[in-house]
Image 1 (spheres, one colour):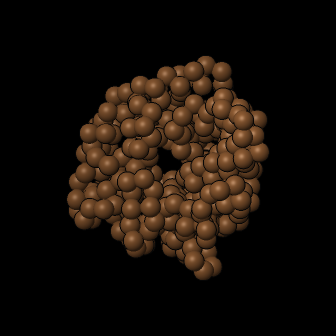
Image 2 (cartoon, one colour; image 1 turned 135 degrees about the horizontal axis):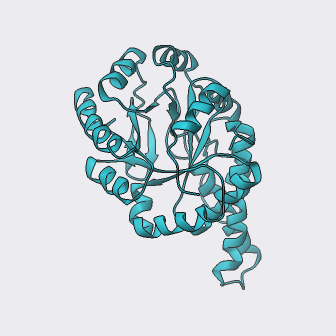
Image 3 (tube, helix red, strand yellow; image 1 turned 90 degrees about the vertical axis):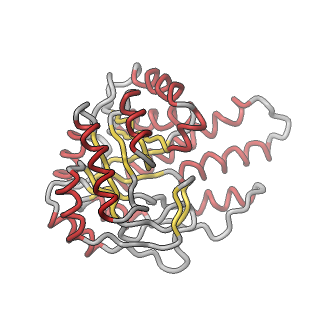
Length: 307
């Protein structure tokens, strides 16, 4: 089955009160684990590639891995660029076969963000490719994306932004943050702000970045077997499920996959110090990705059986 646009899956998610998981991929094992989970849950999937992942694996390798993955499934699957930093990268992945791109102009002034987003939209739409944009700014660190402060999305500005750029979906800031260290105190999301955005932009799919939950069992496992990730905390899954029942149609998940993989690799090598065949420790790591994605599909996204 060929890769698809997210248009139809988002329309169904919006109407059905659930969200689609956008899972970051870097290598074969992550792709395989995500695809296995989607098949087990009969769920639609978005596999997304950051600029860092594209540099690490290479766009051609990623496309060939996706080609192999799609030969063995009937699931609707989107291949998406996460946090595209400029028009040139967005153009390169569109030309290379991605079906969705995110242009991240959140670091620019408002008018500059509009101008650059519109440029990406015009190129992408002429080729049938979906465009996600971002308004507001998330605190935290994710690869090359970094901010010390939250800049919450203004709902009225969001309406103006979507109208003027023509973007298809919008990532907003309501309290999530990038990375594994999201909250020092109680986790809170601004649902009133999300509700207002939904009212002003009816039918427009909203996206949450920085939405990993950082399950504490994996934080503890990493630390137990020689890691050092003290104090890592994410967004509680019940808050994300509530957002998925509102206008949020896409929830990005990356850190949880990294934690699960790394925890299982550390555990395997600590308990089996004689193992040096990568297949020996990458097999449980791949299974951990599968199990984590299934957990998200069922407990957070609500899209099990929605393929």
